[in-house]
Image 1: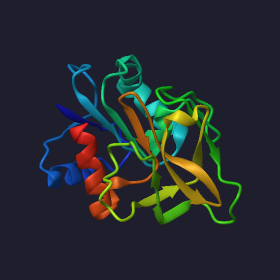
Image 2: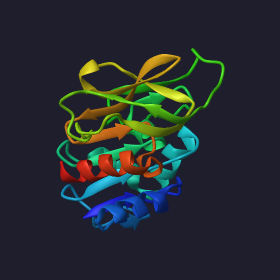
Image 3: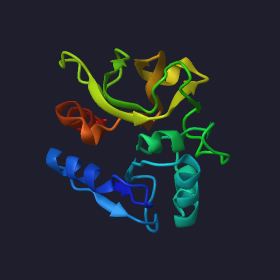
Image 4: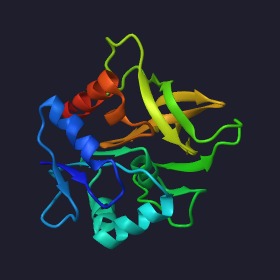
Length: 197
């Protein structure tokens, strides 16, 4: 089963609509009861980091996502990627810790948030990025950027004042800082390929 985490963090309907356009059914779930390691999870989100952590804790999603084995497929989108990390300068709470990344505020540019279309340079061997596409353009909206303690987890990079990890993966846990559900054919391709991996 493909499950979209619906912890009140926004964007769940847009993500489900995009997944359905690909031809895949997805269930919105407000809590994780009855779900397990064989399900696939999308963790979308917009908004503040600490509020995101609190909502995951309140709904039972936090403990559930932490306990899933490394082979369980999880995709974090925007705030969802940040919640999969260890911590963020935006808040005080610890994240889920499934990705070995921290998040810091952009200081290299005058204008934040980083908002609008930008390019991602994917790692050559990363299957979620279609090699036949002439470029990889996605829609971004964020104020904090990832810093990876292990460069091996970085599967995509973007430049906005500085080069930063815009997509990360460790085993079956994957996070993208951009919004594939708002990124037209590029986002549709990425989600379709993630569902196949």
